Length: 407
Image (tube, one colour):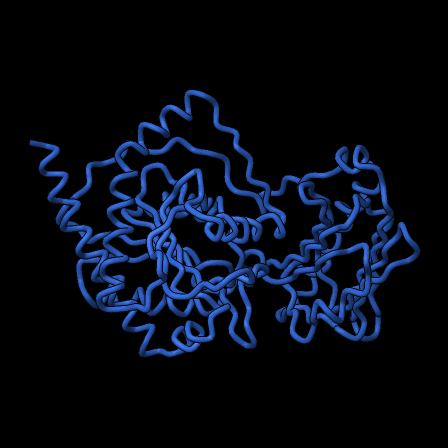
């Protein structure tokens, strides 16, 4: 196995040098007709992925759930569908798309633990077409655990933690810095209904909301993502801190297959979900990171827990007031609202201890009425205006409360 991993790293390095020397300007295009994932008996799976040119890649496995991850220099996936690609019962799901700008990722979720027994990329000397060929074999859970884990690489990994400067007092006269987090992106499409895809819809709405806030004056806006690329849940919170956010709004339009859900809903953080629907949504939102190969672990020690709890003592009531202000404004000038528009859930993106953070489900793609509204530019403009009104009302009340505390 060690010899195999060294071979993969060497291939990554040599292909990187090869591509750099050739100075390819265009993306590698996937060749759907040459791509297939197929069972080879009850314990073996083969995959062939055809591309218009060779690209650097790396292969590794991750646990909980068991999955195989393949990273590429950016690939154009146009024309490839998971239904056509996946002809295996031992692979339960396949996802592919942009991971970070310039890089792509394919994730195979495994029904049972499997190890990579062979991987190779062949290149046609005449056409420059390339084929990544890979074979998986079932292994025990113990053997799978021995080799699972993402390799360290500065081109992919988050930077090492750095000491942050002292927090400066908030300036009540400065514009309110709002960080907008358009949900999902890249390899993680979110909910899909027909041609409507959550990641595209929320990016469009985030841009529209940004324009409304900036034109209104009194707001400064940062987008977590301004393109179709994957951002891990951990990175979204990190980027909000790095931007110096006063407020963090995560924007979604999810889908629930069980029961009826429609209308806008605003969520604030709670360790215990307020209802079953909230719990299921938390599972859906956080699962996007699992499938994309990002492991979030609770590594806080007791001292850190105490410090975070102290920070939340101030942030929690401010966050709940923000959620209520948004619900009130959206009900008055936006809408329609969910019958229980204010809820709590344990969403990972809301766990910044020192930034008031809420998640807004603008609507549900499982509701035909909401889909009609969400795809209507005039309705989205009305909802963006309502969110602006809610933010303005909250800030005015927040400053007044802070003055009372100072006295």
